[in-house]
Image (tube, rainbow, N blue to C red; front, top):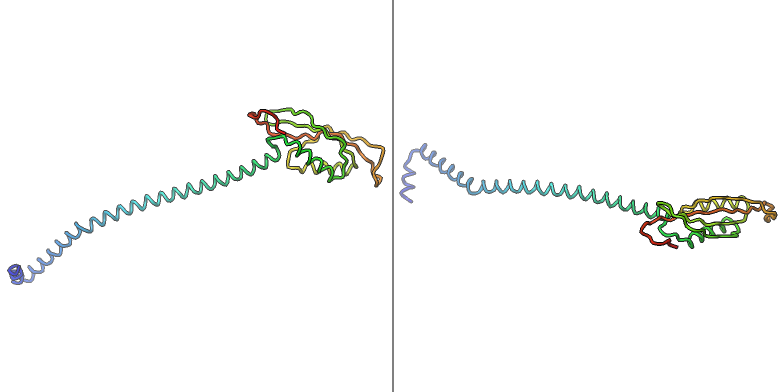
Length: 198
């Protein structure tokens, strides 16, 4: 080793510079081959992985937005269905319906003379449930009753209305009327349902 150093020291300066430059280049090549190329491959692999993960994240974000939109739409549809089932329930719920009619008559100040449930008549999507009603009151109380019935969440049609004047007037002297009509409500006609629900 000392002999090699002695020989290098005896060389001329340009040869020493060339030998040093050659040695630096050789070390650089070895470093590049052993370390830098490996790091470069790792960097490229990391960039590919980053692009893959970014694409996956964007896909997840897009699917999350779609899921939230579908969930909101489902919630809205369920709310609409609940509202529709109030208007057109799956069961007849006649006691509840009669109770609400009776309540509206009392709120309007009417006397209910007769409430009679008629037989149901099915149609394609619904079942028609007529209730024959006879009430007594003034013109204004009867119209108030009809307005209150129209505001019920359930669908109610008033059909075959017949008004007749009674001889006796009320306390204020207003003429009293007798109203006979059908309050027709409906329920959803579920084809799989075996009987009419009450």
